[in-house]
Length: 361
Ligand SMILES: [Zn+2]
Ligand SMILES: [Zn+2]
Image (cartoon, rainbow, N blue to C red):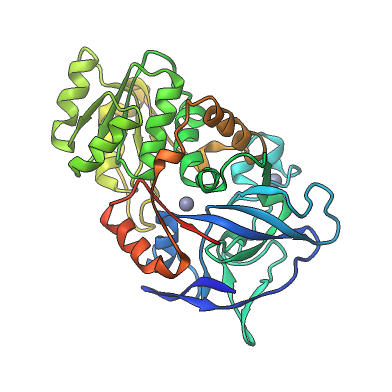
């Protein structure tokens, strides 16, 4: 079968690889759609440290075609969204409604939960991103990484919930718990930022200010619920004007850029909440003023995977999709075949898409 293999830093291609049958607790999924996410590129570029070769892909949806032993929750024919964090339901974090931190994930990035891989190329074992590696025609996934959904939900749209949309919407609804009538600022209007904007809109924020350097992204942000748009230079003025000089109730950084994190913290009002969604580099720091932080009683927090419990939050988001409150279809700017993956990553890096999605036959 075809899979996108990251061969070394900066090198990736579509290759013919072999996939073993699912083992105990695993299922084989025929992929229908796999989103192109910044984190896939971070594996290729080396920002996320890993060993190579590795099959990438962690945002997808498909149809179960085979189940391993011990599986009674899923059967062939089931439609599923893949979660890039498994939800064991038994560990400390799962028991504290923090399944996004589930301890079951393999500590060695790039393997199944038992520390082995189902993917190989001839005799050579291939690593697998987040125990999924779903930028491939099929993948073997832990059953606890699969969330069953209704058959009538379009899988192309559902795929986005597997990472980008859940991360952004969940940042607003779960991590920050945005309240109605408030002022929200989102720094960075890629797929995650647009999803945070949608989350703020769903929460009933009065003002949703989108900040980006690219004017065309700001135009797109308006269609997802941004009420005001500005570049970084104009951001502070707009925010102060809208809040009687207090600053925003909630700021979100959705890029992973330390300068923007600093700006987001600055633009948050006293008593407000600044949430960092974007993943920065391991060797960078951003600075908090030890006098101002307590004096202003600001909350500065990180969020992972929209602080979601996949088994309950994926269906919740699909509920918003069904009611028309969450636009998933509109997030898909462009679809690609797996053979067009090079173009798909070029478009990701050019910032041309809200989301690019690889669709399989
Ligand atoms: Zn767990
Ligand atoms: Zn992702």
